[in-house]
Image (cartoon, rainbow, N blue to C red; front, top):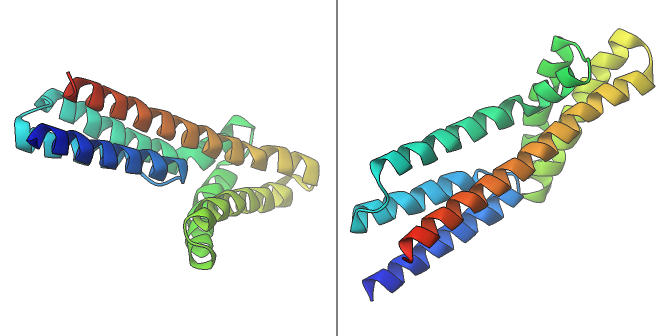
Length: 166
């Protein structure tokens, strides 16, 4: 009975994590929480697995924080535009959350990143087409990180649940 409850709780946490990841939140941490709970209750998974999960969570957060900056850089933008995309994404996410929680966070992050990078590059290049091309780099980078985070959360969940159920 305890095992069924543990699998149910772990499944719920993993599904919540997957849902959060799809909404740009940190769902990988929910899977790590599920793994910590199972470790505490039944001794599974190993400490090594918990460390790998924690490193993946931290790396994902770091990569997500830098995504806007890296997207601008990949398209030839200035470092100032990259920093503006990073700050614009944070401000946009905060404002978006206040206007329309959850979905507004993602929309605000995208709009803020794009807008800030565009303004910096438009001021630098004096050509809106080139500035928009560079600013789109932040949008594509953030979408790629969203996909990566969701895929990572799914992979961690599958691994944890598959090994828990065997």
